[in-house]
Length: 623
Ligand code: XCC
Ligand code: SF4
Image 1 (spheres, protein in one colour):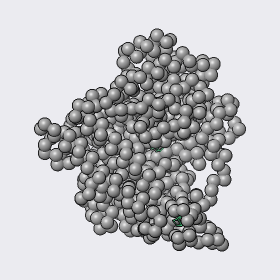
Image 2: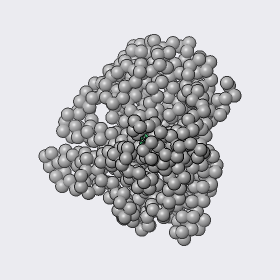
Image 3: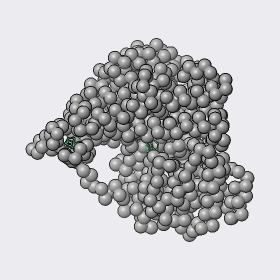
Image 4: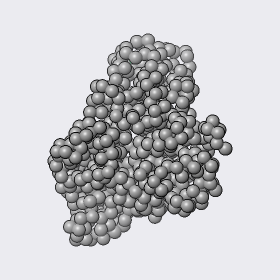
């Protein structure tokens, strides 16, 4: 088995822990992935349908068996419908996340969620202006803003408000295609309606609605989540921290926050630094309380507080296997249901907190806005009291941890540039920066862990492409040392010079997955400055190891915003030549951008660089 781990991860901390898991006879995501082989070919091609009870139906990809479902749906229809449902689920995850953030915001303004404050008043004011809230500053005026944000979800007239942030040329394209999003929830509901048996049966027509739904995610839900979280918890600014399982401490109470929402984890960070809690920790023999993150909850507290990050998606089980985690506290999304069983093999308390997400084997400590600080303290106390139960003989914390510089919100980037995007634009125009690539997304055991992320990013910066990152890619980059200003040495001369003069890394961590909205804002700002559309810019997107339905919605809105996007794992669409052609070709004529699939990160970097160079040529810039 030992030689196997090399094909499973390029991260030494991960391979070490994986060996430990196997030595201890503990099952991980990689073992379950292997047991699933060979995975269902119909599913991989996207040609099975269970949308009604005349089915399940499947299309024979070789053309000898059935070419239609019982209702007459072809492979093209089935693949398109399945993809639309993936977009709906992903967009729903972000919508629900954003809505909850707005509700906390509203309750904070009304004085019902007393643990929360307004941390970025300027941002609040700007947002109120964008929503035309003239009552701002008057009695009840703040609640008007919260209500206006909420009304974007159930909007019945007009379009999702923040789509106005897109360049005018882009909005015109959306309007002419009929894909400007109306209410956020409405588009998601319409996905479910259209994919019900016997409703929308034209692949192009189905996919157009997918774009509309995804735009409501990127320029709606995700953007609202980012804005409101910044207002409540502060807009991130550059700070230093560390990444990888080595951030766990041998002599402290380790609490992991995992999932996606900063609402509770912010409170846990606060509670863990409470002198009374630290005293309690000392009384049970620990030297302190160490909070570390996993996945995007981790990114949220990393960006705002420099809380170290223990790992990305595929490392969640391995964190427990260190034997040094007193509590794994989870909220929503990307949390493996295997964690409960695994935690039971150790002293680790696996604590579920979201009213929406229950797990087998979890200790339930349900979150409520009104009692947020109190619940956070109870959770921290539970972790501290669990410390004496740690079995020291079973503790194995890998040494690996890398320094990183994080916190690059749009505001922070502008500040680093001296208040305007102009220096960045100048660097792009004069060619020291060839272009910008947003490299984002998950891990997936279908490809070696972090291999796609790290190699793609390395190739890009070597070729003077500035990388902006979020999500699990950002964590992979942090672990590989690419988020250190010193990583500029790995960049091409032009990019290196720019980074060294600004003192920033060549890979900028912009936050969690909902913070891809920050990347949209940057793209719009550059396009507006140049008086062009986003699709004219020398920019590209990539998700080298994506797995989640959220990533499908993200990919769709990035392409719908005019950005060419390379996927590193194959989406379940190849069973339909029509859908494949639409995604990889026809979309180019409609929205000025397409998808490409390229599992090899070195080849993917070539695709991106060629794309960026073609956009430079079209703008009359030297390549
Ligand atoms: Fe989840 Fe956001 Fe994917 Fe990582 S990158 S596996 S979605 S944590 Ni969003
Ligand atoms: Fe089969 Fe059509 Fe029903 Fe899908 S909707 S399960 S293809 S009959």
